[in-house]
Image (cartoon, rainbow, N blue to C red; front, side, top):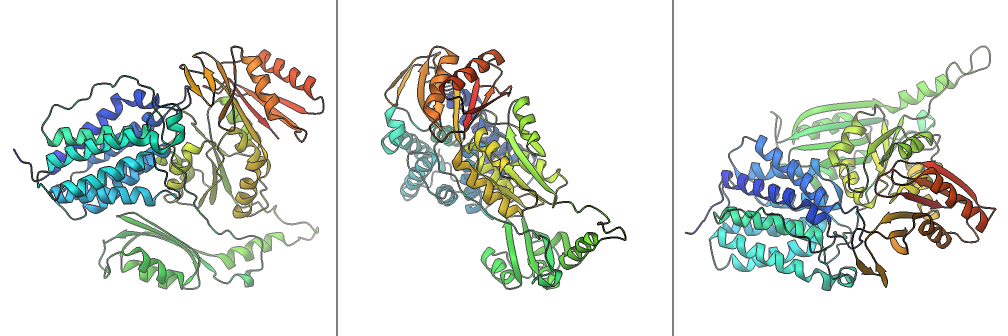
Amino acid sequence: MTLTKISTKKFEQMVQAGSINLKNNADFINSLNVFPVPDGDTGTNMNLSFSSGYDYVVKDNSTSISEKANALAKGLLMGARGNSGVILSQIFRGFANSLDGISEADANDYANAVLVAAKTAYSSVMKPTEGTILTVIRCAAKKGQDIVKETNDVAKLADEIAEEADKALKTTPDLLPVLKEVNVVDSGGQGLVFVLKSFADILNDREVNNDVVENNDENESMSTMVDEEHESVQGKINPEDIVYGYCTQVMIRIGKGKQVTRKFDYQQFYDYLSNLGDSLLVINDDEIAKVHVHTEQPGKVISWAQTFGDLANVKIDNMRLQQEEIMAKDQPNDNGKPETEVESPDTAIISVSSGEGIQKLFKSLGVTNTINGGQTMNPSTQDIVDVVNNSNAKKAIILPNNKNIFLAAEQASKLTDIPLLVVHSKNISQGLSAMFSYNPDESIEENVSMMEDSLDYVSNGQITVAVRDTKFNNLDIKKGNYMGIIDGEITVLDDNLVEASIKMIKKMIDDDSENVTIIYGSDSSMDEAQKISDAISEIDDEIEVEVHEGNQPVYPLIVSVE
């Protein structure tokens, strides 16, 4: 029997099936990792991200597939964890955008939705990498465009799209050398295949196959990160030197209100505001637009905004007046001393890390807020937004300390109530190094620039245990081996933790090395860390060695060399 339309009820069943399938196979996807380390988390991230999307779909009471798809996209965005979760959210943002205004989707609608999903995913990544989830969605979309010319049966179309996605997944080792070296496929793509196959099963009224797949050793997506941007902060300057004196922030509910005369178009909206001032930032989804601009004409900003929707929030600060008050506090009293101490701008510095000891170490260096997370525990976009918005700060900096958290942090920077800038620290060592560069007397932009620059001057080493036998980079790795990973590359193997650590650190230090920091985790001891410290001192007694208890999981030892 031919199925020509996808109803709202059917779409909700599709999302539910995809969510269950990801949940049941999260451990399998987690195990699909090039490195044989116990921290693969693509499956966990995709599962939690898609589960958030399904929760939004269930809570949405609308009767059109357009609104349900928007609910899925919104839930995915807010729940996105890790790079795979963020890219998945962008796939379904494009999917939802294509279905705008459609109550029930036919075959052509479904094929176009997958096509726009692919285009949106590619545009969300600065340097798209083939052999990843991007390849899978692109090939699936192309197949959909070919098949829809031959049939109006959306069930048959969904089958063809899912099958092509699976075929594309199998080609990923031929596109990424690192996958081919260990004969694995991309795990982000595998997660997407699970979703698309679940969609096809529901549309074909088949019993959904939610069995757990057997572990075949495959790998995590290796998409390139996106860099984000900016925000302007006033320093101690003469009020008369401020060109645009009103910091104006507006939140607009797009399409709602009595004064709406225009359909929201980002470029039109942005171009008009760009002529009214500087430090302009416009962030939007389908429902909300948020504006920040420094201007002399806040009234024009507000009037313009109201032609696109009603105002959910308006905040206008007279920056000249604020500067006058700051300067007045600097004036000496009769004793020749300032009446009050002038505090630095209130900046929240947020660090993502796991392990009570590591979190205490970050706080001792000036971090104000910590988010519990890292490998295997990537925080969601919503987690980051909540911490920033509850920080009571005027602006914020975040240290992800893990490249798999970059995209969630970047997404969060578009949704927070205050400016949030990201320092792209890939590991704990880089995060700690960045904190040594922080200067509360500098602007947030200058601090982020200095913190980013510091990341290149520290080498990071990690010791962990191999979870399976494999060969990688000409190394014959056995399950249970201690592996030394230097700046992301496995370089050392040994059966003994202390010996593996000493071998790794010998490779890390050179004639310019001055400081070595050892952080031992929950699976190692102070005694072992001290033995390693003593060995370093014997190698070079001019190197300063610090030992800290980190309590971190997964990695018995984290080492930084500067």
